[in-house]
Each structure stands twice: as structure tokens, then as C-alpha cells.
Length: 247
Image 1 (tube, rainbow, N blue to C red):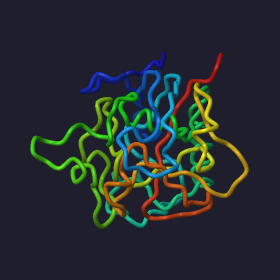
Image 2 (cartoon, rainbow, N blue to C red):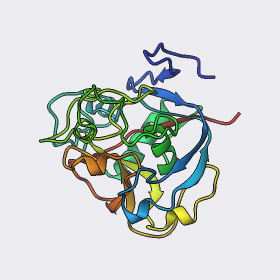
Image 3 (cartoon, one colour):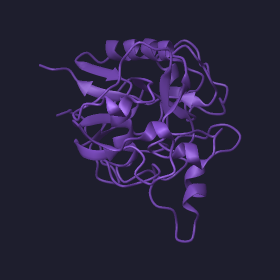
């Protein structure tokens, strides 16, 4: 068990990385129905299938510009209004460089992008039947509009309500890189336990929607694939998973 645990208003166990200040939330493992369980989604969100993931720690927020700059020499972000805005315009090599520096100051721990199975499970607050990654909207509010969160540029992390695990901005703000290689039929190839689709191919996956897209793209099950790992966009950022090294 990690030594430093923090109190969370939603009672999830959390750990704060000491150099950057990034906060990670423990997501207890379990099984869930992965894919579009509400209907109306894209063809690549099917078939709905049972997936089981092991427990993991995931960033409470998208990595912020302040956290990035504690390890990296420059801030690539276009939307750089404050240090609490998520870092944008980073590609997968940029993230790999950040992760290498992060692991250098945290011996015994591994950091990585989440798999899309882990990402969707966390977005659904542990695999619940939830369409968007946030607490239910106030009575009378339109669910899609409440989850949309798009406009002109990113906002400071934590500007919107978290989901039931206390994880923020999994719907909207910035698209987030995940580790899988994109294939339209990846779900037909998934193993039941901890699946990850890795193969040859140029396209990588983004999850979660962004300020630049409407609510359809912010659904937990939405898979967005038009991205090479070298691409940088002002509507794309990331969050990390943390693992303790095996003893």
C-alpha cells in the first residue's frame, strides 16, 4: 500500500506525487460492460463486451501545465492562461519524456498512459452504467449540455463536478491519449482480463471529448481515432496511471 494517503471528499484513497504534486485516485478493480450501452454510438464502440480490470491508480485531473513545468524545460500549451490549466499540444513522445523524468524521481513506481479499458472503467466511476464522466446534473438540467463543457479553449482542471470516484474532467476539457493502437474491430479481439489492443498501425486513440467538440464526443464509451502518435493539438492532453513496481 502506498505510504502517503490523503482524505478525499468522496472517500477514495489518493496519493500525491511529491515532485509535481499530481494527485492519483485508487480505482478498485472489477468487471463491467465496455462499449456503448446506451445506443446511438459509433460502430467502433461495439460489440458491448464484459471486461475485467485490476485495481489501478489514475490521475484525479488531467496533467496540468504547472505539473508539467516542474519536470520539463518548456510549456507547449496554446491555452496557457494559468498553471492549473491542463497541458495541451503534447504528443506521445513528449509524454514518454515526461514519464521518464517522473520515474527518475520516483524509484520503485511506474507511470504510463491508461489503456482504453482502464480509462472507460474510470470514466464510468468503476464501470457503472454512466454515459458521461461526472456526477449527475442538477435537477432539471440537460444531461448532454451539462456534460458538454465545450467552448473556446480549455479550463482549469476541476472546474466541473467529479464523478463518484472523485475524478475530474473525464468528459470534456481536453481529449486524452490512451495507450492502445486504434482498430475499429478491437473489441472483437479483446481478452476478458485487462485488455489492450497493440498492433502495427499509425492511429492512436483519444478519449473523453474536449472543449472543441460537442457532447456526443464526451461520452465515456466514445473512441476517437484520427491521431498519429506524433500529432500535437491544442485540444489534446493526458492523464497518467501509476503502478507500484513489483517486489
